[in-house]
Every structure is written in C-alpha cells, then in structure tokens.
Image (tube, rainbow, N blue to C red; front, side, top):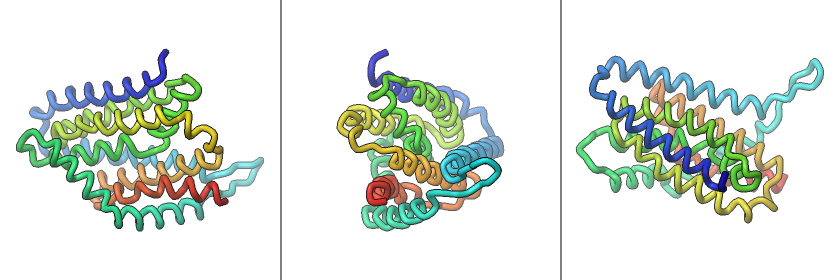
Length: 235
C-alpha cells in the first residue's frame, strides 16, 4: 500500500456517506431526524469518554489512579483563550458560507458539525502519522467506517453541507501525512498521549452539543491541541 491511502479512504468514505445520507433525507421526518441526532450525540459522547479515560486512568495491580488532568485543564484553558482571539468558530462559518451551493438553511451547521466531528481527535492525528511513518493505514481505515456512518447521519438530518467535510479532512490528514517525516523526531509518547486526551475531550464536547444543544464553541478550543504539545515538551 502507498503512503496516503488512509487519507484517500477517509475522504472517499465521507463523500459516500454524504451521498447515501442525502438520498434518504427526504423520507425522514423531523421527529426521526431529531432522534438520529440524539443517538449520534450519545454515541459521540461515549467515544469521547472512552478515549479520555484510556489516557486518564492508570491501573496498577489493585489500585486505580489518574494522570494528565492538570495538563488537560491548562491546555483547554489556554486553547480556549487563543481560539477566542483567533475567532476560529467564525472562520469555519465563513468557509461554510463560501462553500454554500444552495438555499439549504442547515448547510453551515452541517458542514461545521461534521468537520469538527471528523477532524478533531486522536485518530485524525495519529492515523496519518502511522500511515506515513509506519506504512500502517489501519487506524484511518477504521476511522473511515466511523466517519462514513456519522456523515451519512449528519447529511440526512442537516443536509448536504455535511458531505463537504471531506475537503477539510483531505487537507488536514493529507498535511499531517506529508509533514510526518519532519514531525517524527520531535514526537514523544507524552505528546501523543496529550493529543489523544485533549482530542477525546473535544469529541465529548461535540457530543454534548449534539445531544443537549449546549452551544459549546468547540472550534475555538482547537488551539488546545497545540498547547498540549508545548506542555508535554516543557513537562
């Protein structure tokens, strides 16, 4: 297999999932769409919880302890500060407006929600790294299945805007794959664990938005993924 096949598979799965969701959206009632979004929100919450707990909990013999909580708190706080300064959430919405091709009132909402769900998290970062450095696209293949289902549900509920998340996925994961060779000398276990922990917490926030309509500006928390790398280096 050639390097980058994982990113191509992930991009293709989102396009396919979007097409399938769009074909079925017209037969879904508003009540069914609401239920779908609630189910999706519940699933995303547990994906985030599972990812976070796998890095927080440390089990040794018969004792359970925690780690990384201070790192996560500092990273999220500083990341939120930087995100508000950069107005990242507004930039996502601007990109959605630029990509608008119809009068679909849910276009931006679908695009932003699907992009954040598929691009934020450990799998979107570690997957391309494994593909490029270890020639192992397994993680991205797994992510492709998950993203295809998620985008199909988003598209059926919010419209075709969700399918356009294939573009940021291709750019984001493709860029990491291309830059992996430069990153590899500086990537430590602590940095990888930090990215996984903070990324999973952001996934949890997305789930809350979907299930409870909390309006958390997850996009403005994205700088925390950079902050956690600096924290890991300094620590």
